[in-house]
Amino acid sequence: MRYDRVVSPPARWIVPAVFLLFAAIGPTMAARQSAPQTPAATATEVATYEAFRAWITRQAVALQNANDDVVFGRYSEELRQQGKSPQEIATTVASLKAMGDRAEVERWNRILTAPQPAFNTAPNAFLVSMTKGLRPGRSLDVGMGQGRNTIYLAQQGWDSVGFDPADRAVASAQEQAKKLGVKITTSIARDDDFAWGTSQWDLIVLSYVAVRDLTTKIVQALRRGGMVVVEGFHRDATKNRSIGGAVVFDTNELIQLFPSLRVVRYEDSDGVGDFGQENTRIVRLAAVKP
Image (cartoon, rainbow, N blue to C red; front, side):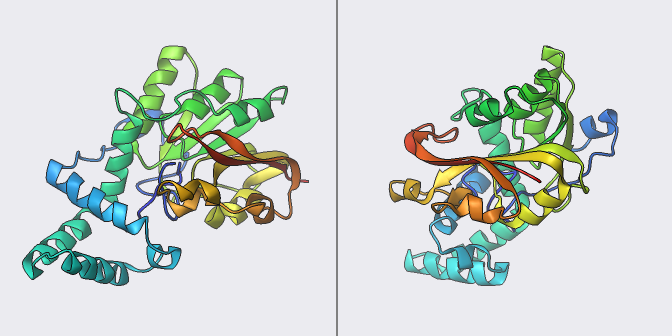
């Protein structure tokens, strides 16, 4: 069970990586559009999962990445301390196990397709800045969400590809792209299902999604001269609120994650995050494969 998206944005209050569903760039558009969408969670399921998620994001990274038996064992103890009966605990854990990754996918479907979004729906400003003047090539938006960056790149002439496990968000992106008259290629997929390829991309974008477990794939998938663009939160941003650890980075960590790439720009400054939309400390990296 994953308690995060990477794709992130995953903000995208995430924990280990991108997640779920079916995959790859190969299927036709008709096949993608006919893929079954994640069933909506009931109000009870939402409440059960949100309570669990609020707890797990406050735990140490080691516990967040532990197997389900360990995680649910610790959560059962937490519920016991809250005064829950053995029957209530058993019912809660059984419900969480039954929901599996579906709960996280559904959560992001709700966030990313909300009538009044609580995130920046415009293209990421750092991405816009770093791609200005670049010759368009083939781009990949990891954890594309509702397609704000994927669509922007297509509008600039890029062969724009994106993937995300949040199926209704991806469908929304395709609908918006059609209205705007641009073509995007999308997959409903998690990071470990997606076909990254080797030397396939001139640009890879990771905007508020997990990065640490993907660095080898990213470097391998970039073409020579290709650029990776990353934006996330600095560790200091967690002082005032809970943020999933996958999108939180220490000082200079982004640079250290890509030692083989040439840093074009690294920023560590106060700014308004695309998710949360509050003034906080943001880190950004643009780096090129030699």
